[in-house]
Image 1 (cartoon, rainbow, N blue to C red):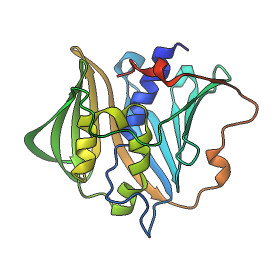
Image 2 (cartoon, helix red, strand yellow):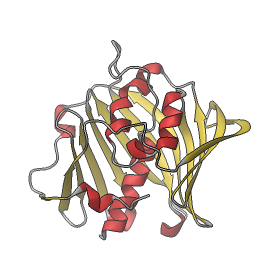
Image 3 (cartoon, one colour):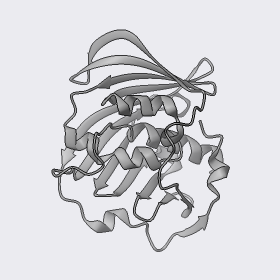
Image 4 (cartoon, rainbow, N blue to C red):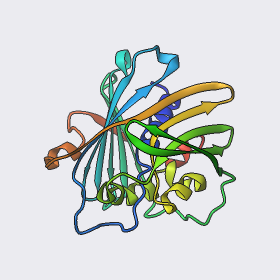
Length: 229
């Protein structure tokens, strides 16, 4: 699979991590799985499942890309590392991630409230439009998610090589909002739609957050991912 494909998966992963907290670690921290449904028009009409496992400072994301096989992202805030594994190719890549992205940097992205409200996937939501480098996101967001779910993701947002650097998305974090439905558009083409399906609090094994030892993992320079928006 080409780097472009890795970048797109990371774009989806970045969207799934945009849960807004007020504190890095709350007393009642969230542990469990957040489930998403992903539609990618270029890959057909069938929706694909994406799940985000969260435990402390570790995050593991699984996505079924159909004929392309499963893909997984492992993020560890403590070690500042991100690892991507592609099942179909039996290979992986890892990169260092910054301790924290500087939220004061202006990357030219914009965030605009449309004033529209609706009930999306069972949540009271409002619509925002985010734009960055030719990519538009139609975001239906809510403040109604449990506080500990939002709090669980703050450091992931800051350390993710995409969402952490996009000032517009961090604007949602500051407002205490989280996405219920996100449509990613490039040019006049819908690239993907990501829907929150279910939040599942549960105990998770530490083994879930460890990349498989039988996969060859190559170190990658994070600068190579610079054009993934």
